[in-house]
Image 1: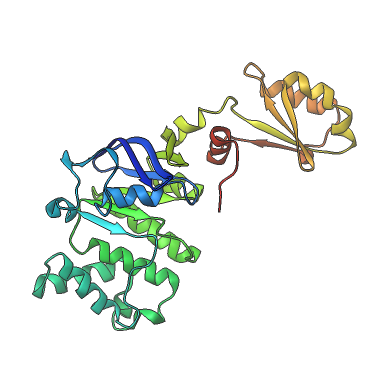
Image 2 (image 1 turned 90 degrees about the vertical axis):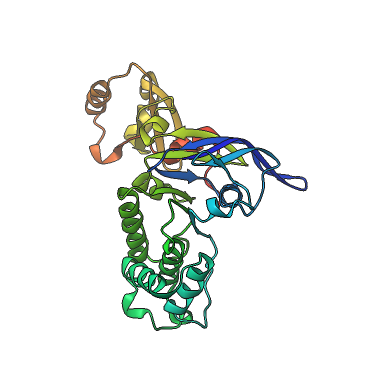
Length: 305
């Protein structure tokens, strides 16, 4: 459905996207994960036709995306990172304006507004000015505006920034229902738990380059280890540190030792050793691989704010 091939975008001396290629299948909910400044918003701007790549090609449904291809742009819904609403107007008035951009009018526009407001649970606040809305309500109204014209593709650029947990979950539930009904969704975020919940495939982007891509399980398999064991530092674990090293690589993390077991190490052997050394189970924590660990492994650092 969406194809980027060797796409590069520069702003003067800054390369925002560097030879990026990716494919999003029809009906997929694809997550693009990366820190602020990684290139996510630039990529979304290219997908919606607001900007042009300096190199490479972008197609949606096999059709090249350009700013002049208004028919193709009309098949896309875009939820920008920055809230794009008129604060002095109410929700219904805002949606009337956005609907007019897609040549909706009359009874069809009124029906679409009713449908969109009910879908994002704002029907009872339709006459309230947007300036009285909470951050979560504004985000949901922005989402409603992107859906008035029944797009085939929905692009969501960090749509939960600054919203409360209840509104975030409402947005998640709504996006999942749209995707279940067949809509193709591209979702950017720097929150790993969001792509873990929502997305069938995840691309990790940093400094404008795609550094990993796949399902969550495929990404977790990129790690050179399957589990880690965290051991609180105390007299018992300090005394047996050298013995732990026969099971794998030990590193110090704050007030704990972290063991990355070797490939052929059996967890049952580690447990037996822990019991033999008289170490309390409360001092031991088994940790499964995480998306954060994959990010650290591929980039060598934590997520940026």
